[in-house]
Image (tube, rainbow, N blue to C red; front, side, top):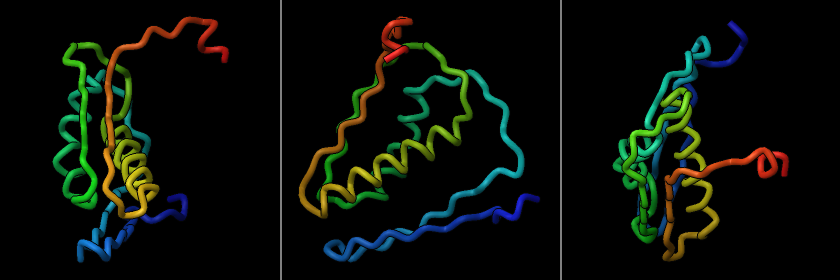
Length: 116
């Protein structure tokens, strides 16, 4: 074991809504193998938990491409990254009304663009 706990907790309070969210993030003991996952499905499956985790003053607007394109990834790690990005964005809105836009679409990355 590397000295890191297997379970991490975090707590976010939204005083205006009277809501306190306690999140439990499991830390895998070993790195999980990457598998082919459909990114739009991972995001779609995460939306209900994400909606419950953010203040009701924030509207979630999801635009998910409905293709069968896959990425090689750990779906759980993708969900954690999405969740963290969205929580950070909601905190930047400082409990004001806001719109959080999540977009999944295919992008062709050329060698020149990747070098930027």
